[in-house]
Amino acid sequence: MKPAKYMEEEKLIHKAIKALVQDLGPTETARFLNLRRARRLDSVRRHRQWQAHLDKDKFFDEIFGAEKGVERRDRSGEHRDQS
Image (tube, rainbow, N blue to C red; front, side):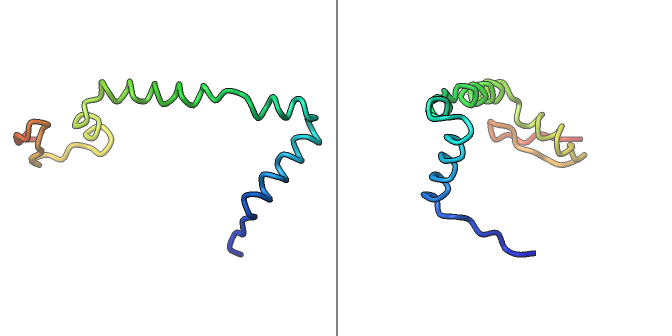
């Protein structure tokens, strides 16, 4: 398998805009390039809200499984027994 070759950023931008203008026309291309990116911000906001209410230790135990007899420190630095 050949290693991937990437074109220079300027060339990529030029070709992409050219393709958009050919397919959409100049007005719709400009409209597309100026669309708000609000959905991305909304997903970041949702993720931060989820994290704010997250119990890290419980989450890690659910994902990675709690090991019996393994001591873990809680947020205060105190040991917790996992047995």
